[in-house]
Image 1 (cartoon, rainbow over the protein chains, first blue to last red):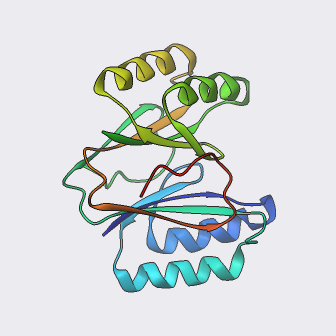
Image 2: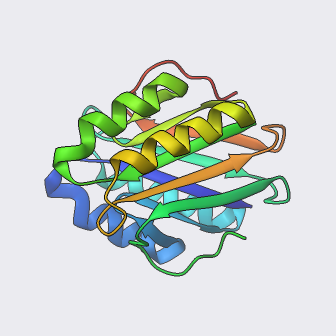
Length: 87
Length: 87
């Protein structure tokens, strides 16, 4: 599956959250990562994040695409993140 | 179509960008919006954003899903944005 992860977490936890996410996904913009991930790794990613975030203050959203066949990615302006995996 | 929009723009332009995006989409997290949009409105949205952003400094990414049939949205922590449209 392909996931798009967006996070909005307290400043103190940003570095930790980003570090965890980058183990599994590609960073594409400020607080956005994306990438192919196995169900097992997705589970691990969520567990690791759960340990670090403050569930009363932080927010992490996962968009899970079973296939990218019906999806497309467009961008405007500069490229801030890493490699483009999506299309 | 359904789009997920993530932006990372200079502080001076955040309010303007958010205002434009909210005309067409639902705000779900800090710099993330999502929603069903017609092709015509998507074109308008991109034109309006193009006028406001600094293409040498800012970044806007659009994930375009022709269908949400193969997609799912999960979240962790608090809900920061508006209504949930996705699933």
